[in-house]
Image (cartoon, rainbow, N blue to C red; front, side, top):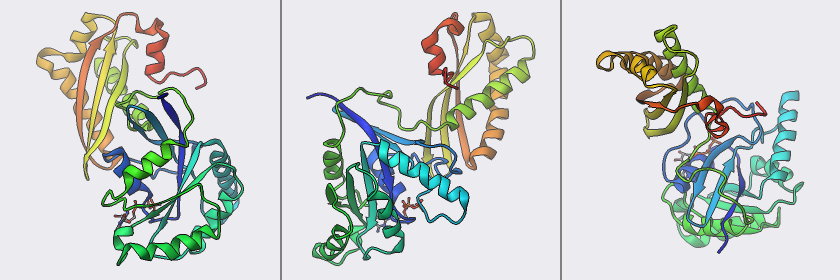
Length: 298
Ligand SMILES: Nc1nc2c(ncn2[C@@H]2O[C@H](COP(=O)(O)OP(=O)(O)OP(=O)(O)O)[C@@H](O)[C@H]2O)c(=O)[nH]1
């Protein structure tokens, strides 16, 4: 079977369980800094890859009632996102009839042709499974959903089914991101920049600007610990020696200073794993440049 891939927006009023759903699907905590201000459109929130498909979940900023001009602009952005994605997961609660918040989102959803999958979450809170039927009926009256899947994001109930159904809405396509990548937060880039800044500061003129830092892995290990593994690339062995320093002292100092800044930035403890590697002529190699986040459109 051909590989499928595509972009999926998750919408729903606050507290319905969107983050829990995404974390449960992807299988690890990825919500680091996902609550940052609504600045970019189509910001990738997390990526889920299997042998047969890749789903890229995107944030939909500003689906809330506009209180001022900015809110309206963001809602326009949200609408464009909803038009561009391959499918929309609309998350609601199994325990309540559609409320004003849900209806407000439905007003957006009726304006797009994208298939909308109704995810009825928190079924674990129902006294029995039949109780979900009147809720489903009420939603069905408001919008013709492509699919309706009751789940419990918290207890991972019926999530396999949800993913299976969702895959059917993805077109055939390439694997856009490496399979081990679960987030594409721009925070990775900021983290890399802070580490680079410490190196340049501590090594002064000894290491020219031919040093690049790539954050290879960034994961929330527990509620208050973020694990970061970063590679520091230099062009020559001699530069590697300088950055590692006598008995590893320089690298340790880089790590300590970067960690202080990053812990403030991320608001949680950090385990920073730094590796120094030699890559000859990296500056000239376009692919590596892209890997470091230097894109032409930037
Ligand atoms: N019982 C139960 N609780 C759930 C379930 N899914 C999420 N929750 C809880 O509902 C609350 C809100 O979940 P979130 O995942 O933060 O909701 P959200 O939609 O991302 O919220 P916002 O970020 O405010 O938009 C948390 O306390 C979750 O533990 C579920 O399937 N069952």
